Length: 65
Image (cartoon, rainbow, N blue to C red; front, side, top):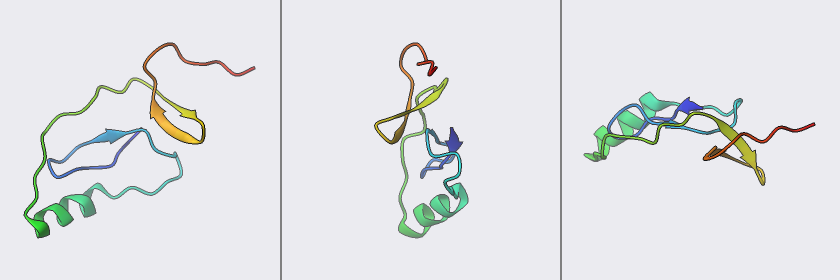
């Protein structure tokens, strides 16, 4: 989970651990375009890779063996 940013500021999301994120650039783009967004986000407790995509875990974590 990383802060990917949005037009409100902090915005956590499940993303690849090696993937680059730049919340400051997101905020700057929002300012340049005069955009805003709703402040708030899902409380992510854990992330998992499902069919090649990172997503928030809604239930018990899968354990690979």
